[in-house]
Image 1 (tube, rainbow, N blue to C red):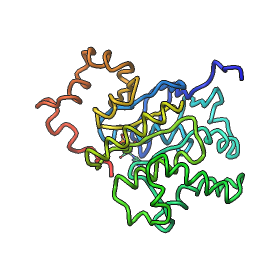
Image 2: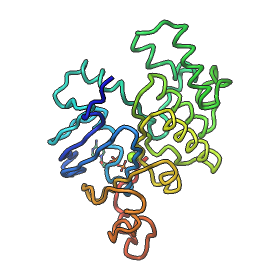
Image 3: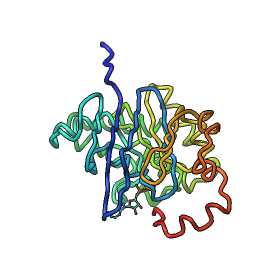
Length: 260
Ligand SMILES: Nc1ncnc2c1ncn2[C@@H]1O[C@H](COP(=O)(O)OP(=O)(O)O)[C@@H](O)[C@H]1O
Ligand SMILES: [Mg+2]
């Protein structure tokens, strides 16, 4: 298949505001196939919003968002659903359906799409649960799982539809060191399979372990884009404060709404 020069996800000059507050101003972000990226920034700055905009769950006020060259702002619901098939997201907290078993959670999207038979869907669900080391949890309910297991089920669910791009919203928050290690290894395993990851996190060891490039957002703007080395060499005070907070930052963000 000929390689299209347009492959990838691109946000250009995106503006987005909600409740009278500007969340993103002229925001740019590129996700090229094979280049894994982490978005960094303080709580409440708009990182989850970026992921939701790309998924078409929110609409930008202006600017464009393209997936493999196609502008999602010009798409109808059916076209948008087709474009979304290339992307899956592991939401903050996992967002599993509590009334469904683990197996049903993983199979959910494929059952909704209705393109495959039940036996094939069950085979895929089992395979994806195997990838995250949870075949034996197929018939359990989310309430019976630890936080780390829930995250892994959420990853298996995201993989069910075989997406090219996988978004991770704070995948290691609240996990113990072994849980964090498992998630890092799973992300690296996916990258070896040719998947491209886009992560939002405050967990710098994980960001550095799994990402090639970094986008730093501050006060609605992209203030840095580049590699770890470039980021560490940058003289931006916002980045320095993010890595090692000092009195300069004391209570600066105290009135910001913390994410839940
Ligand atoms: N429906 C809404 N009404 C008003 N403000 C909102 C709404 N949804 C999100 N926000 C605000 O948008 C900002 C960005 O949110 P979010 O993208 O979740 O931040 P992050 O993921 O970086 O913590 C937050 O300050 C939040 O309070
Ligand atoms: Mg968030």
